[in-house]
Length: 524
Ligand SMILES: [Zn+2]
Image (cartoon, rainbow, N blue to C red):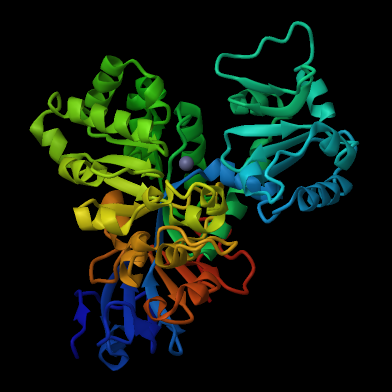
């Protein structure tokens, strides 16, 4: 077999031939059957696996790479952002207002204009747009412009009026922040009310939701994403049933795992049934605001979740959040039976700020850090003004050196769902504006790639993330070997082909292909 490997199968469904197979310099081809990689090696040695029904894809020198596993994104938010107006590229108030004017020009008067992606800390003006500016730019539509972090929104006067925020009988919910100017007038920025606002906007029909999901899933496929974990803390029975329905109906083609919000644990039994019957995974519990919990309640909830076989994931961008998470994990472990403890993992999501001494503590606990190298690239300017913190921002190399297991997430839509950009950022640690951020934390190309392949697969318990016999045939084809490219080239590298479970779900330059789970690209 010329150094290659194979499983015993009759004929292959698909053979990718005459290119490079990442991790296997001795192989130029890979054969797939029943959704699995069944062989790789020299094409001439794989010929016996080629039958009349085998689909052949010539690689012509291109590289087969494991598909990307995004360990932390927000699918429905991403889908809704993809359906609205994105202002992510704007770097000045002027650009922002110009984009909003274009958006309003395309919207019928009176309809809500939904925009996403502003962050005042990333604007060169270093301030929020004012209510007057938003009113002038968007006079005929109520406007909701969501903050890039998804934690707040800017509203124009029409939106403020429709939502009744200036009515005498309006009482903000607990935790809401409504910004006012010196005279007491609303500035248009509100935080801590995101769900409240969403619930008051015109309802999105199920058909529209499905169309959005289909579009966003294809966008993920075009970025090479073959599996993801949805990390939304508000996930409960409704949200998870909805995602399961979209997966079962073929609107989402990726392997889908969904975290359940820590406040929704009472729905776990019902969720288990949904997961079992509809082919999604519910591997983890998401703790978003653990710092606000009573410690004994937090510890008990973590212990119960782990005992039930659930991973526990803690949002931690600030030191206080990291400290609370580690304390809760340390305290809960004693209450979890050893057998259960061996099966579950605890994860720190983001790990935005990790001070000295913490890496060793994180490593000793066996806690994973799900890092977001894309933040350094897309949101780096935000941190450039705080030189004292920079060495501790989105650390990677020093965590790995301390023995911490690392995987990656794009946190889409907070940053674009583009693992290649995040991998490039892990290798370069330069922001889009050119700020260098903690170059000591740069990862080697193979370590950077592993964040979204082999390491991500281990965290996600998927037999994927590498190309080997018996593994899931979740593969992508790239024009070149990603390990031989520099960050700048990786950033702009297109994905030619995305294969999930042996099925081609995306081909660059082709319109949306498989419309239903039963449609087959291989039928003549
Ligand atoms: Zn997130």
